[in-house]
Length: 205
Image 1: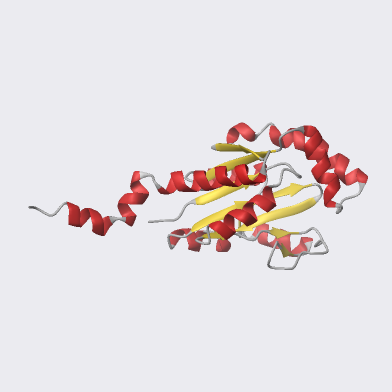
Image 2 (image 1 turned 30 degrees about the vertical axis):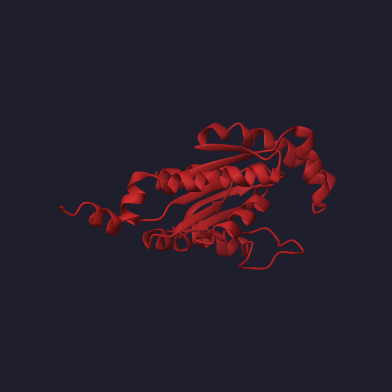
């Protein structure tokens, strides 16, 4: 039985990465797919951990060779998810999580209709701006651009299966864990997982 592909998207500053990291700590059975990007790494980032950092030439070659499951341009930088990072894990029955924007999410859902989409919202516009400024990694122009872009991103929230409002971190994380649990309790997943139990229960008296 193939694994489930989870897509988590959000506007910058909604707390997506922190929530995803906490989710993965609680659910080690889920594999995080590390995307490729042409943007420069931030001070705390390491190649192969947060992203695979590549130049534009390498990225464009991968696009031309059809190596990406999805790719998109965001704030002047290219991002993409390689097929090799996702498809073998799903085929082996492993759940995989993608942390990508709505453009990539749309492409993935077209290629893999069974993917589960989760969109994370901030509790208010003021809080979104506060979080962006508190990160200390962007200048005022970049923050303004991200705030403006968030409006367009949020208009695509309805395309996702679930929406989580990150008002309180613990509550938002609990919501994400509940989504995972509910998916794993579906009959087709449970029937495959508990085949031996069912065989025992169905033995004739």
